[in-house]
Amino acid sequence: MAQKNDRSSRIRGFQALNHEERLKAVAEFAGLEPDALDPLRDTGNLPFPLADRLVENVIGTMTVPIGIATNMLVDGRDVLVPMATEESSVIAAVCNAAKQCRETGGFTTSTTAPQMIAQIQLVEVPDPELARQKILKRREAIKKLCDRQDPLLVELGGGLADIEVRVLETAGGSMVITHLIVDTRDAMGANAVNTMAEALAPKIAEWTGGRVYLRILSNLADRRLARAHAIWSLDAIATAELSGEAVRDGILSASHFAAADPYRAATHNKGIMNGVTAVVLATGNDTRAIEAGAHAYAARSGRYTSLSRWESTADGDLVGVLELPLAVGTVGGATKLHPTARLCLEIMGIETAEALQRVIAAVGLAQNFAALKALATVGVQHGHMRLHAQNIALMAGAVGDEVTAVAEAMVARGTVRQDVAAQELARLRDGGSK
Ligand code: NAD
Image 1 (tube, protein in one colour):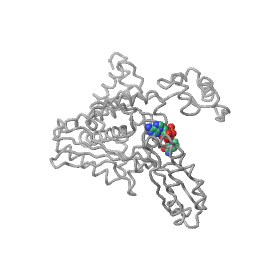
Image 2 (cartoon, helix red, strand yellow):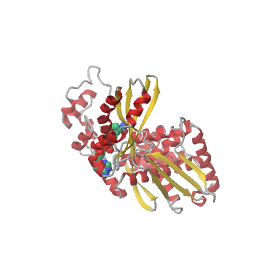
Image 3 (cartoon, protein in one colour):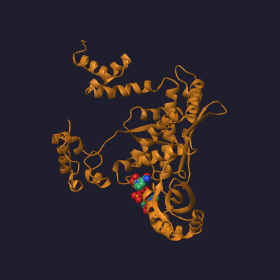
Image 4 (cartoon, helix red, strand yellow):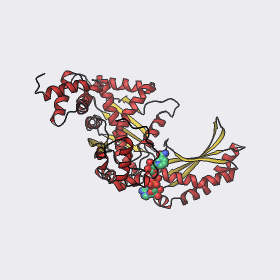
C-alpha cells in the first residue's frame, strides 16, 4: 500500500515505547492494519526483551533457517556445523564437499595468534618521524596503560602484544598512525581494543603535540588468520560424466581465472563467504566485520584476488588451501547473549575462538570446492534448480504439497520462472486439465 505523504518519520520517543506501542506507531505510519504486523509480534528464538537489549528501536526479529552441515571432519574431529543462511544449496554444497574429502583425512587447519589491531590517528604534527620515535620509545608505558583497561583479558593471557607506528602520506597531509596490537583471546575484541585506543589517545597527543582524531579497530585483521587445506582424490571427485582428472583440471582452471581477474575473484570469494558468513551468523558473530576483513585481505597486494588456491598434488589429486582473517569470538557481543548462538557453539563442541576459526575456515574451503566443482562440470543452476524452483513455487502462491508438485513440474519443463509456476499452479488446482 502506498504511504501517505503527510506522515513524518520524526517520531519522538519511539525508543521509549513498548513493543505493542512501537508496532502501532509503525502500522499507523505505513498505513497497515494492526494485524498485518503479526509476523513481527512473534520474535521466535530471541525473546523480545533480549532483542530490545541487543539493538535499538526493536519491533521484531528476522529469522533465517539454520541447517546442519554433515560429513565435516576438521583436524581429525567429526563436527556438525550449524549454518544460518537464507540461500538454498549452500548447506547441501558443504555436505557434499566434506563427504568427498573424508577418505583423504578431511580438513586440516591452523591459526595465528588472536591479535587485533586498533588504530590511533594523529594529525598536525610538525615532524611526523620524530613523533613516531616518541611514541615507539614509550612502548612499556603504553602496554601498562592499555592492559589496565582490561585486567580480565590480561588475566586470561591476552592484552597488548606490541605496537607499530606508521607515517602515512595522505591528501590531508602527513599522519602518524599508531597500531595497538592486542591479543584478545576468545573475544572478537572490538570493544576491548577500542577502549584501549581511546584511553591512550590523549597521551599520544600530549607526547607529540599533535591532535588525535580516530581511535578504532581495523577490520583488516591480518594478524588473526585461519587456514584450511584438504585433499580430494581423483576417484572422489569423478562424476558420472567426467573423470577425476577432468574435474580437477576444470577446478584448477577456475582457480587460475579467479586469481587473475577481480571480476571473477569477487564471485569466487562470495562463494567462500556463503559458508563462512553462515557459521559466523549462527554463532552470533559480526558478519560485517568478517566480510570486511576477508575482502580487504583479498586486496592486500593492491589488486583484489581470490582467497583460496587450488593445486594438483604429486599424485595428481586435487588440493585446496584457504587463508583469511577470522575475527570471531566465543565471548562478547551477541555470542554469549543469544541463546541460539550459544547452542550452536555447543552443537559444535566449541569453547574457544580459535576452534571456531578452524571450523569456519574448513566450511569456507568446502563451499569453495563445491562451487568450483559445479561450475567446472554441470554449472551451478543444475544443483540450484530444484531448491530454487521451490522458492519460485512459494512466490507464486503454492502451499503445502503444491510446492513440490509445482517445483517438479517446472524442473521437468526446464524453465524455472514465476509465470511458469503460476501456470503450473493453476493447472494443478484445476485438476491438471489444462
Ligand atoms: P565485549 O566487549 O562484549 O567482550 C569482550 C570482553 O570480554 C573482553 O574485553 C574481556 O574483558 C571479557 N572476556 C571474558 N572472557 C574472555 C575470554 N575468554 N577471552 C577474551 N575476553 C574475555 O566484546 P568484544 O569482543 O570486545 O566486541 C565485540 C562486539 O563489538 C561485537 O558485537 C561487534 O559487532 C562490535 N563492534 C565491532 C566493530 C567493528 O567491527 N568495526 C566496532 C565496534 C564494535
